[in-house]
Length: 102
Picture 1 (tube, rainbow, N blue to C red):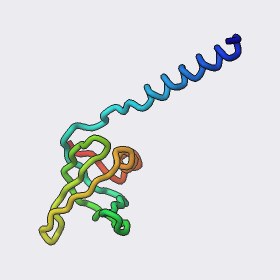
Picture 2: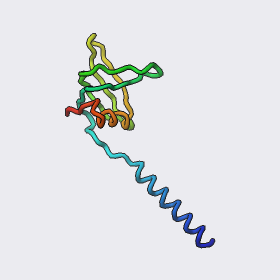
Picture 3: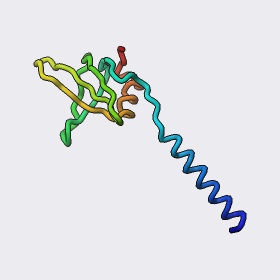
Picture 4: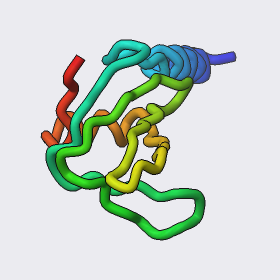
């Protein structure tokens, strides 16, 4: 094997190692907490259409493996549960559409 081939293998191994390290996600929030919808937050139940969560809704949030599970009681006393991917939820928090309370 010549020096150029050896350098390419080393670069690939380094890139693979770097990619593996960046795949580890840090937990930004507690396992269970409350949040409030203060802006436009859209969710989809199953394969249905996008629906906006009512602004002002306080939700209980539970952390799952790759998502956050939001639950609340609507105005008609129905239990509501939606799941948002972690990055989607964090985007809503970072953009100010969801406010983390506790």
